[in-house]
Length: 328
Image (tube, rainbow, N blue to C red):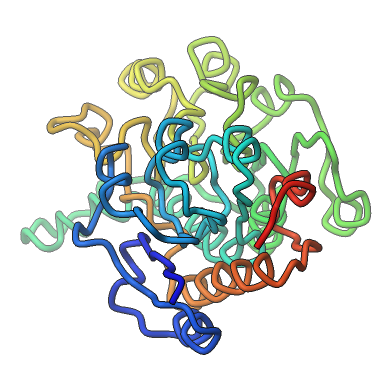
């Protein structure tokens, strides 16, 4: 019986549609002995003999793929795939898929939660109240009438725009391939990146990490942001130069930041950004509401079934060119 390995930690105790689909199709569904697989050696130890993997954020490098001869499908449980060497997978005839429809609304809701938490000092005031310090020391930053700069108008960026518009925010965005009908409907002004930084009271990142976007937020771009503005990142930690962000926050140039992602996860002890009062950090969980988790898992399982059934018209297939060399 062919085996499918599920490495996504949050699915370990979720016996949902995804598992039923795979078992009904005749697959043996397993979980790794370890709850996390942060290294190449961990992946190599756990993934031997499996034909498909519902993958988390563990590394699938060329070395790993070279030593998993049975593997035919890497089905990412989510939309990020920076830990997968897609060209190496393609060379080895391994299909790589993502679940683009599964989590965009969950991430958008978390983006707004971070934005509200930072601008209204939710965490620090809650801690004060719990400690018996009943004081109203904060003057909040209102969202109504403020300008939100959205870097990337893909599914998540558009979902954020809908929610921010409901708060009465003005919207500007940068996007290489915009949906002009959506842009017109929500009154979004398309601008270049520097203009977005200069005009936005809050900037939120929703772009993939590439050679062009790595450390997109750095000393130069931070200084172009408005004094007293806020940065939100629910995309990828590598989009931000954390040393430069720390300097902008401690100097007072930025009022605050909300981060669901960091350059190194989990962060080292005493990470300086985590310790700042004007920064709210959540542990890369923006996509993990109950509905999104089930939707992503079901989509990831269905992608595996579709690939083995030679159905190649999958919205989340990253390397369709693998079809020519792929055999069941």
